[in-house]
Length: 340
Image: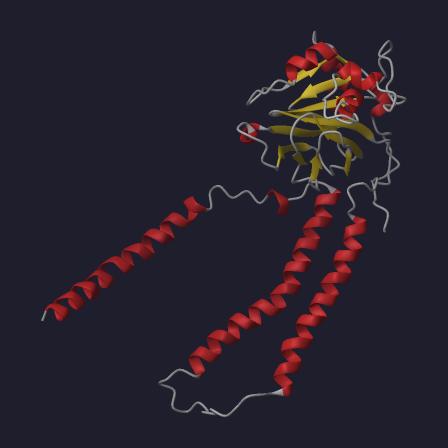
């Protein structure tokens, strides 16, 4: 008697709660997906567009196996259900050469194709590979700090914090390092992610195909302020970039080694800042301060004083470079990447 009552209660709960839960789930789907931002699938740069194509092609090839398996699973479950007395019953069946050929041959072919595509794209989309263009590239030295990004423009002799600007349709040559733990430099709508590591320099080459403001971030967890380690990357017209550089040079702030020591201290959610001038040896000092023979972390001056450190590329800041020297020619052709 108790079993029947319990069963009736359970059945009543199913009849009452299940429909309500289904409606609740359907209504909550928009809320669950509200935080999704598929920026990787909305490329605004040549490299990101090629990576999107690679993702879609690889996904499509893998679905050639996944979709038939899902469909056939449902078909077999329906066809060979217990109530289907018309289905063939073959308890002694154990092997089919045709099935074995399909099960092994098709996945092997897909793996071969994926391997070839991966090999080609690995070389074609190598972050260290410069973008071939008739437009003069802009060099940006990026330094990850706790918890902010420092961007140095060595040709323009200016610097910014948590603010990155560049002309559209102009290659950007990034030199990336860290003055703290490992981070990862990433602008999803423009292309590849590259790690920033202390005492090491990594490179990245990107280009924006259109003007706009894109989200930049550190995509590698680096401590309590990691979530606020974001910046805006702004692609401008040549005229807008020219005006932006003049605006930065009009700033009253200069980034000296002493000022950098204060900037490098851990801080969270740092607002954007600009510097009209920057010590030309600063990036090299940061890069080499962790490269001594001992476990001691060198000061910036000690790093440059080390005989193993070369600063041939560091220039004086007596005469700031002309803005136009870093801007593309008006009639320059669109950038194209060499095939590997």
